[in-house]
Image 1 (tube, one colour):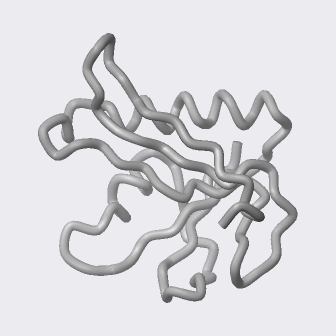
Image 2: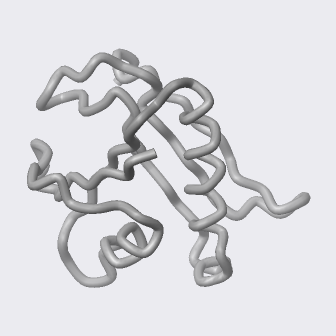
Length: 112
């Protein structure tokens, strides 16, 4: 979805690839397809490296980067189900907005 202005990066710890992150980069919101302007599309940490603080570190770096660009809120979403990332996102400061996206995922926000 190029109109979402994807910004994506591999995540490394020294030479070790541990994950991937992708954002919708400062895009005018156009619900339901585009939620934004700053939307965390993907945050993936390889299962072998989960539980080691990489997810928190990735969120902290993303916040630093988008805040420097003038962002005031970072949005993301997650689906309910076993092992959903809701508790992780709540732990790092996200809270529910009360909205759901077109896929039925819960939209959450982190005030920056």
